[in-house]
Length: 155
Image 1 (cartoon, rainbow, N blue to C red):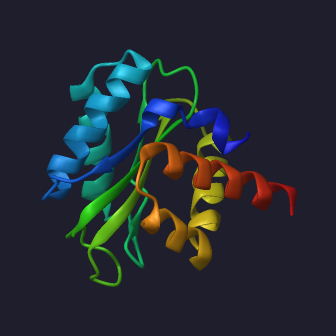
Image 2: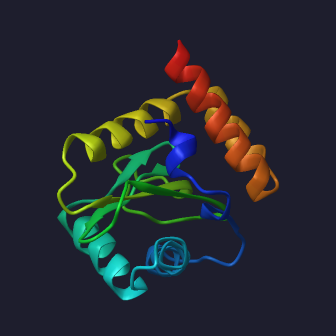
Image 3: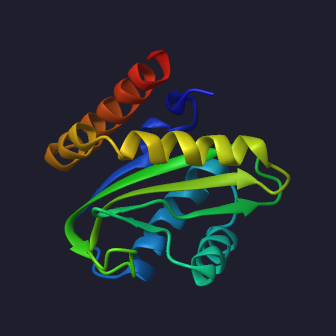
C-alpha cells in the first residue's frame, strides 16, 4: 500500500483558524465525510472515542489520530498542517502543528496497523517534518508527503 493511494488530493488541508483539538477533529471529519461519503458525526465519534483512550500526539508537534469506520471501503488518510500549533495532550506536552488522520474499515487489522506504521516512520524523519512545516499549500504538503513516502518505501 502506497501512502499516495490513501491520501487524496482533497485530503490535505492548511488550517489557519483551528484553535482546539475538537475544532480540528470536526474540520477533518467534515472533509473525510466529503471524501468517503460517510457521516461526519460518525467519523468524529470514532476519532474522539479513540482519543479518549489516550492522546495520539506523538511528540515533536505531530499527531496521528485514527479510528475505524463500519462500511469504509479502504484506509483513508487526511493531512493537516496548522498555522498555529494547538494543545493535543501529547506525550512531550508540546503543541501539535502536523496531523495525519487515518480512517480504516471496521474489520481492518493489519492494513490499519501497516498504515499507522508507515506514517509514524515517515514522520520520525526530521527533514520530512521540516519540509512539511515549510509547505505553503495543500498541493505542496501532499507532494512532500507522498514523494517522501515513496522514497522511504523504496529504500
